[in-house]
Structure formats: C-alpha cells, structure tokens
Length: 209
Image 1 (cartoon, rainbow, N blue to C red):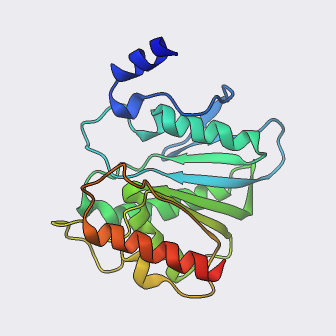
Image 2 (image 1 turned 45 degrees about the horizontal axis):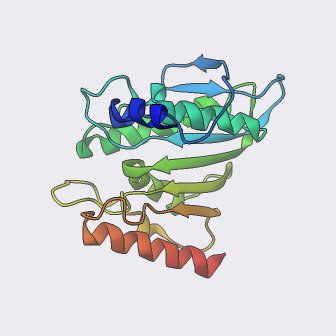
C-alpha cells in the first residue's frame, strides 16, 4: 500500500490513480468524447462526464486522465454507457463556445448505438459546473439527472463570464433530479461566493428531494 502511495505522490495530480478498482473497458474514440459501453450492442442509459477547466499546456487532455477513464469504465459496471467529454475548457472566456461544443457533443453521443437517447444523465465537475445553468433553465426532455461534483456555481473573482453561467439563478421547480457532492474542506481558500452558491444549491436540493 505504501509503495502505491509513494508512486502516486510522484505523479502530477491529474494523473493520480482513480479511487476505485474498475474493469479495463475498451473505449471508442470520437472527436469530442470517448464511449465506454457495457458488453452487448443494445441501447443503455448514458452518463455524460463533463470535466472542469484546466490549463491548456496540461497533458494529456482530460479524456486520458485516470479519473475520467475510471468514471467511464465504472459506469459500465452499473449497466450504463459512459460518455467522457474532451472539450478543451481552458479559460473562463471559453464558456460560450464550449457550451455550444458540449451541446453538439451530447447530441452526437445520443446517436451512439449503445445509448438510449431519451435516458441521459450529465455529471459535471469543478469548472464544468457553470455550464449547468443551461440544463437547469430549460431541461431537455432526455435529461434524467444532473450530478455536480465540487462544482463552481458562480464565477470566481476576476472571471469575466456571461450572466447565463449562473446556475443558482436558474434554480426553479420542476427541475431534473440533482446529485450534489461538495469537496468540504479540500479547498479552504475557495471564494466565499462559490461556497455560498454551493450551500444554496444544497439547500434547494434538500427542499425538493
């Protein structure tokens, strides 16, 4: 165990091993996403994994990080098809273009032969959380669940981001089921506004659950 921990400590954080053991699932590479499908060729519910914002010089890109490989592969163990996006979100100014890219990528993924186009969940991480405002304002008919892990829910100080990327302002009922996981004390210097937005979402989720 200590040898594994020592080896992980020498790696960049984005290359640390995934926290769960998972099968080695063959993936199909598309332009903007990878497909992880369970055995068989029938349609399955899909989970779309949306990565956060990271520096452009960081390599490899998000789809090849052990974390997202792990999530995609683990989805198949639950009978779902994993769709791991790779849309190069590197700067707060990228959000408008990336929102269009993500929408197009999801539509392409819904046409995959192993995806049930009417049963799709979106799971956004970190800076990907700002994109959730669109799904909350006008939930598409295919969206069965929205999951957010340690999400950025309000622009951070210095970010010039359009008002459309304000997920908290978009909260209304009805909305798709929301699964929220927060990082707790992992980032003690997170801006008060971001912490407050996460708390507001947690309160809203509890009211409607």
